[in-house]
Length: 336
Image (cartoon, rainbow, N blue to C red; front, side, top):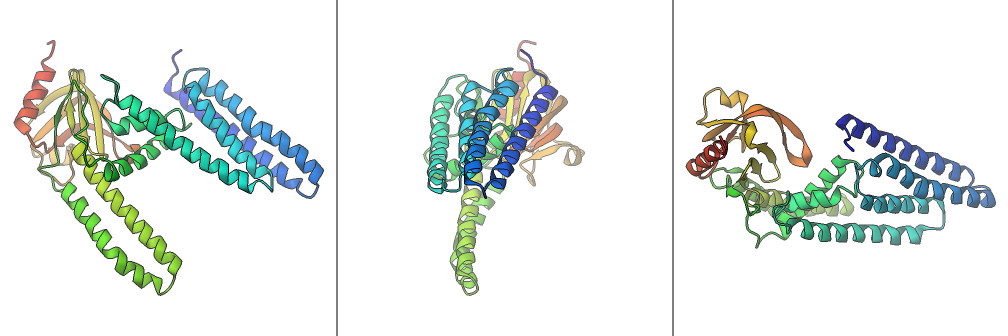
């Protein structure tokens, strides 16, 4: 069953409207009965049925049955309804905290298992790419694809910053990888900024502590988290190289840029011209590109957090420009 993009968007919006409306109305009705314990108990039971069963059934009817989402996504939807149902009962604080902890642990465990399984599948779309594996694992969990993209980037940054130090550049077995981090300075700049953040945290903490100890610890935590983000972005630049596959080109610059181009969409590869400075997207930014790739028609590139940008020409600063240019020419001449 083919579902158009417009129909998908309509179904997502309709589910969100119905789901939010049911949760808000049931919550208001339950709170309005707080003065009458017996009536409150009856209304709370009915509201619990609505937020768990009815919302899950609506989700199944609108998104699972037509094949937009998988059946495994029903479980997190019902679990979120169960978590919200605990707010309908005034004495369920302990159960709510325990359930929230189980939800978080379950989500992390689910993502880890799915990512390990998906990135090890040979010749798959996410082979060797943790970000693709995380996004594919989260797709059935989050109703809104944008939320899956945001959470995937968040987990991806933590992975690259904390757990990737023994990893090799992520590339499928059938693709040839080309780096862009040796000629460009942004990676070194990100590492330098991360070091500056760590060095300045103690002094910043002591200064802010004079006015507020709480804000001092919050500022220190944000400083550490910011440094982790900078290191993660820098590591992703090295571990997510440009790929030339058997029938595609995938331009990647860490988590900051991604454009997958089918072979037939490649028009030409050439040396940069003067007008490329204004008409082409430069990857990485503020670098001196050594090649320019033109597309037959505009496509959408993906930036950080899944932000999309329309491009028709990309100027790149590749480390091995001659080998990369020859690989692209060989790709474009395939079966011609």
